[in-house]
Image 1 (spheres, rainbow, N blue to C red):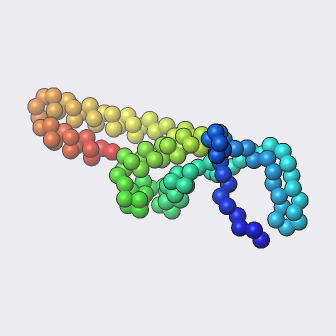
Image 2 (cartoon, rainbow, N blue to C red):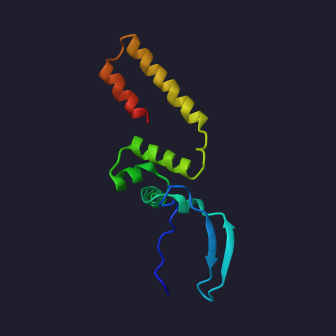
Image 3 (cartoon, rainbow, N blue to C red):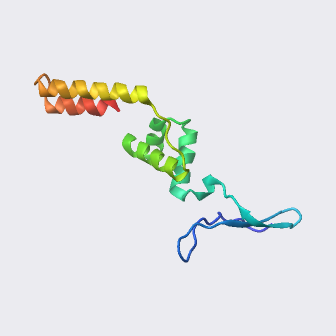
Length: 130
């Protein structure tokens, strides 16, 4: 059996997206030619694939991804958003959570404006919201 290499996804000449056009059976050698849709996960680069693997092993918990990759929560979140974009997926809306955070942010800024807390306290409270 021949060594299998990762499927190239970009043209080495123009960096265009490569199209799968031939499939071959390992058992009998039969080949099929045509235009086949490639697996969306096969289009990920090595860094994106590594992030996805860590994310799955962490059962979708970004805290575990942070720990495993040694990155901050905002970086992990940005990498997840970039991964979703690369896969052609949109994040699921989380209106309730976003509304609650926005409300808490407004409360903190109001307290700062009214002089009830210092700028340092406001910054600490805002960072803690995540």
